[in-house]
Each structure stands twice: as structure tokens, then as C-alpha cells.
Length: 460
Image (cartoon, rainbow, N blue to C red; front, side, top):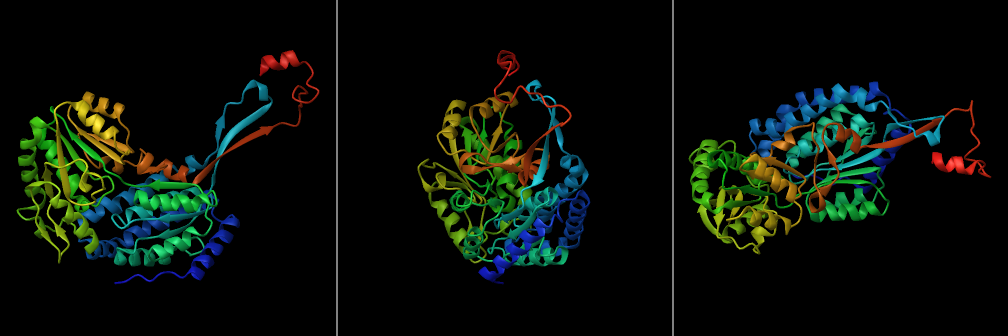
């Protein structure tokens, strides 16, 4: 299946319709927003099977993994917004200093306006629809741009959106990077982009031309530390799961392993055992093991297998775009596998003897989207205090993204801004400061020629 680019003329037409619709005030009321969230909730249930079928076709993603990592996360986000939307929409009182009396101050949330949401191919349902929940609850209109690399998923989402919403409110634009370029030439009120740091720079550069605010959810090389005191079996199980989820094509997957020298041999043995537990004797025949998204991605990741000593795995099948989960030892820190985000099931291992070595290794590189630590909690807290990352887990991987009550986002090279839960509502809102002053009393102190100046200075 091949996706056809939406024409530039059609993009302009949709944007104009959405701009007019937003200007009409139709999206502002609580009742309207809640009903649209419920529509999306019903649509997600109705379209669960077509979406799962499309994910299997494009990525060999099993229905179980599709529900766990995509659909259930969106469903949880919708439920959270429906529950709390009324409270989030209420204006909040703020303290007013004595110098401003008699006035009252408050903060009100207003929708930013017309939103553009651009998503990648690796979690094409979650990373497109989760931000949409925030746009709806904040009262925005939205144009959704799915990835052409998963054409069946993108087509299914377009059909779902068309069947659920009017295009003047929410619409899907399809196509490759030419379509992205055309979209970024237009003016929006907020852009949320998920993808690589390289493309994130392009989005930010184009948005700067109109001073459009952006939320960038990027990637990077997320380190995983296995310290001397770690429970090797638990660490191997949770790292194996986090690394083989979506065949490592996850922006917060453990990208490389910093492992205490005393743990290395035990970890290799435990990792091999956990691989069998997760995927059987041969991952290739597991219904729960995803394939690389394209021939280009396969060739890139397979090329990393030459950049270290394979101590586990290493099998490939270009015809199926299959790469076996692989542990690499004796890796040069300057090699491409340690410089580029892997985005695949290859895990390089670098040993250390002192925790400080691991901390400095991380600090000398760009800030990652995630950081994982296995060992004593107090030692993990110290590692987090000394490093920086978008999110983190101690004695786990991936799971911080599953909690809609904490923000998901990057820092530095791994992104800017965050969303999930109320932060999704806030991401698509402007926090407007409002001061209301009575007309029954008008104190003269602030007016020229500033009488009683010594008293005024004390109040200030």
C-alpha cells in the first residue's frame, strides 16, 4: 500500500476551514469538548481491530502489544481528560499583592487555536492520538500528520478520524516529507512533533519564522546502567522486555548498556534466558517480535552488528527485515553504534568499575530522552541527581511513559516541552493572566504626580 500526498491546495483549504471554525468559538464550551473526547473514546473502541490489523501488517506488531503499547495508553489518556476536564478548565485564583488593591487576580486557560500534530511510524497510533486528546480538551482544532512508513495504519487512522469528526475541526493530512514541508510553510498556533533530533531542528527552524510555539518529542541514546548491587535476573528481564518491545524501535528503549564489570558475564547468561522466556527458542517465530519498518532501517541496524563482538544473537533475515536481539561487547565508544540512536534490537555493552565512570560517560553526551538504573535505590537517586534526562526509571525500563499523571518529554537534544494528563491540556493552552479592578474605588497613589511618594515606596 502506498500513501498519496495531500495536495498543497487541499492543505490550505483545510487550514482555512479550521481557522474559521475555531474563530467561531464552537470549540470553547466544556460540553462540546467533553462530547468530542467521548466521540474519540467510542471511535477507539470501534476501530481497535482495524488498527491492530494495520499494525500487524506494517510492523508485525501483535494485537496484544498493540493494545498494551498503543491503544490502552490513548484510552487511559481520554478517560483521564474526561474525568478532570471541568476542573482543568476553571480559572484559578491567584494572590494579589497589597500594592494592587482593590483588585482580584486569576489565571484562565484558553486554547492556543489551530494545532498541527506530526507523528512518527514506531508507535503510529499512540503518538498521533495521545496529543490529539490534549488538543481536544484544550479546545483547539487539529491537523494530524501520520507517517507514510506505516501506510496501512495511516490509512486506518484517516478513515477513523473522517468517520468521527468534521474536517473543519479535526482532519488528517497524508504524505511524505514534501507534505511535511508544505504544512510547515503554513501558520499554526502550536506544533507538536515527535521524531528525530535532526527533523526536530527543521520543525523548529520553520516554526521560528512565524514564532509558533513547538513541543518537540525527540530521541537520542538512552543509557541503561546495571550497577554492582543490581538484581541481575530482574535487570535482564526488564531490559530484555524494554529492548525487544517493538524490536527496539522505541524512542525510550535502552540504547546502550553501562554494566559493572562484575555483572557482565552473569547478565549475558540471564539475558539469554529471558529472551527465551519472552520470545521462545527462536525470536523469528514469535508472534510478539516486531520487524524493522523498512529495508533501509534493516540495513542501518544490521550494519551495527559489525561494530563489536557478538556475545548473544546476531541472526538476520533481510527478506523479512528480521534482526535477532543482539548483545555486543568490546564496543568502541567512538563507533557509529555508540554515536547514533540505534532504534533497533542491538544493545552495546560497556563495562565500568566505578559508578562515577558511568556518570561521566553519560554527562559527556547529549541529554537523553530516558535513563535507566538498576541497583540500590539510593545509588540510583544519586545517579539521577548527577545526570539529566527527559524521564527515568530506577530498577525498570519504559514504564514511566505509562503513567498519565507524570509528564513525558525530553530535555536538550531529546526535546522540549512535555505532555500526558493535565500537561497535555496545558500544552495546547495559553495560561492567561487576568486582573479585575473595581470601579467603586480609585486610589490616587499610582497616578502622576505621585503624591505621598514616601508612603507609596514603602507599599511597593
